[in-house]
Length: 139
Length: 269
Image (cartoon, rainbow over all chains, first blue to last red; front, side, top):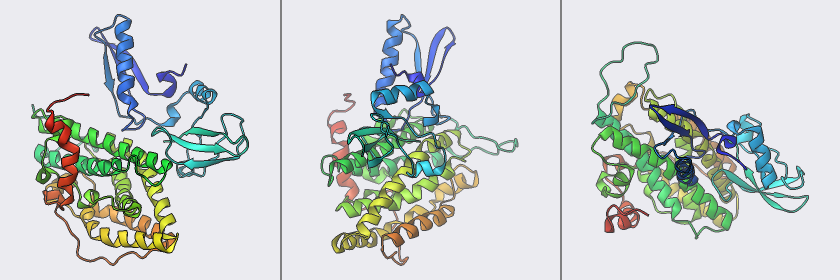
């Protein structure tokens, strides 16, 4: 299972004045899943008997795909989503990246659209196995 | 309670008199209004874009902007300290209280108008939020640091389309060039410093709008050259949005955007 910690959006869990405080950070500002994630965390905490726990959103430092763990990258790939490129140069942000197909591993891939099913993903296609796939964009 | 804005003191000197909350409120509100109105315009393409990929792209770009607007509105509400939250600021203000740029309220027109408008805006906002990351207002710097990476994608996407249209067929070239000429008179407002912003600039809270101009010029010149389009000559520029004097289009946009909340006050869904 891909966890919030794997994605790097979990910024910390601490006990403050006897209550549990969970700090989360959004991936993209407008990500519609931000609220769903927060509610799911609150529900999980309540189920664990921590009904007075609090979830706080933090913006700084801004989330980046570099904060995704190696395990998280592998889980994404196993699920069929190409993990973000680790090239941190501006070239990566401006699209000269090479993306390997998560299904067959070929690097003969082409970008279909910069914007995929969610804000954080782009839509690509593999020329070798002819399958379309999602690519987690670098930010 | 009026929230005192958290201000960084870079050289360890004692900060001088605090900036008036009123000026900061209006500044942050205008940033929010720009993002919300353009975000709403892009959302009007949902289900209507020329192809599925572009439909999704425009919705995603709109989401980025609406997300930025929410953070700015929430902060503006805290500065004002009168209990207005992001919904109250977005849904319960009339046209004259909106401070957005005239450029962003212009109708979507055809696809060329939408893309040229987006290029004109994104090519400005990307370097602007880059500069805003250095703001001495910690909260604004944090929001800017989130927005800057997203806006890089906006510039790229709009650039690619403007190049494809401008360097395309006779029809697409003509439409892109016409869009550019019709929108040009609204670009001056981005570089016009409202009086209320002057002190924020002096205090290192707001970036210098004129200092953004070279970066905007460079992006536009590069894209327009590749698109084989002519940059219009600088002429008289229409302003007024920052002071609540809008074109006739904003009222119609607000009517559609606000109707549900106004018909069912406080509704949650």
